[in-house]
Length: 538
Image (cartoon, rainbow, N blue to C red; front, side, top):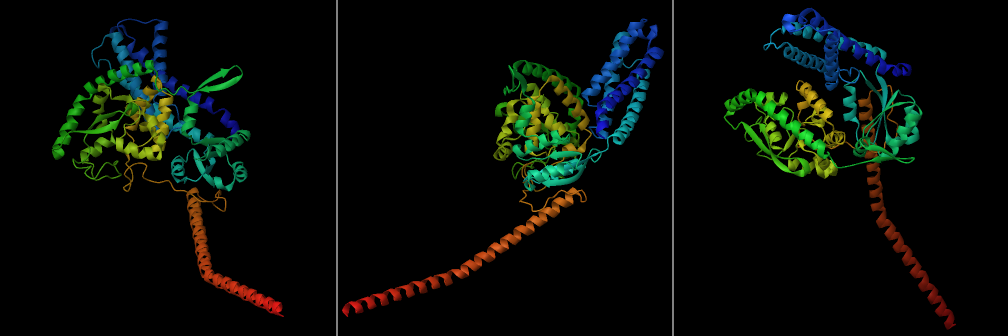
């Protein structure tokens, strides 16, 4: 298994080269047999002219596929890779057709049939490629047997997420930090990979070094400081390595480039989508006659409060009982609003906020002041997200969900802030198009929650026996351990109550005994004094 891991990157590289070559080959066939005619393209191309067009097409395939993360067959789910490949094929061929139309000075949609055939062939090719490479990847690299190390917080949420990717991870065992470092080290050697949950840094570093010593694959939940360290600049003071943390947000030149890009894109999108705006407005108005737009106070850079614009997706009186996030199956959401939320079109009026300068195309999700204040009570670092403008889309919106916990949301947004680049903005915008087709990203919080932080994480007490076991499922082990801990706690409490009652009952007896002892001592003292006096009298 470990020997095959060495060739993993090479295999995936060759697979990526093959699908790029197939698509470029289809374009080359259409160019030589359909388009390279003087009456169509306007002139005859030489040897280098042919290769320039074909290489340019291949470069577009590579760049746009990387933009959509279309080559990550082993990392992403099949559906994600499939959507990424489909969108990249469509975008590449649209750009290629526009390029040829400009060269040949065609009218709109003239000579489009050959490019449509190329698109159909490439779509079929990438779909087959995705499924074939997925089978090959699963055969060469089966899922790892994983040991999960957790601390005082319940690992159920992390286990649930990892079990949704059984093609990559098999949670074969769990063990609590309170079992002791040496006991956990013994368990680590029995597994192919280790997942280190949210545990103190000291113990985490011990396990990281131990995994490094023993060549064990290791996954680790990062802390806020880890994200800052990952994005630091590495410098050397002679022979001493240092990490530089600038901690100043975006530089001036990055802010200027980002603002220019925001204005151009938001104006173009607003013009193109204006018919969609009109249609949505008519549907909302026709349903209940209420207002089309919904204004609400939100936070942006440096804690500045602004009014965000959205299409109204709930009843007019939806917040008469106070502010709260949307729930799963929320009855306040209208039928029109349900559709808008599923495809994220309720956010489109925020293009106006971007044009005004309150928001950016990409950035942290703008939070309501009262909800952000609730989050800050539990997570004081939550305000770190306000080092940049709020965004229409963002790192947390793409890789998280509507009901993602505030702490995870903070880590995702900090990852964006600390690693910002113009290319990252383009990648997030491209990925946003893909998540429009994924319903799970719009799931609300639970019925009993007002905010995503309302659900308290379960805290574990000391366990007497190791939880790790390959024979039982991870969920069963956690539940059984929790029941044992509860039973032990109840037994201890019962014993303490019995001891307290015994002590209460024994207290009067001890008092009576001590009183009797004191009385006896006093009588003896009086008798001795009488004897002395009598002897003196003699």
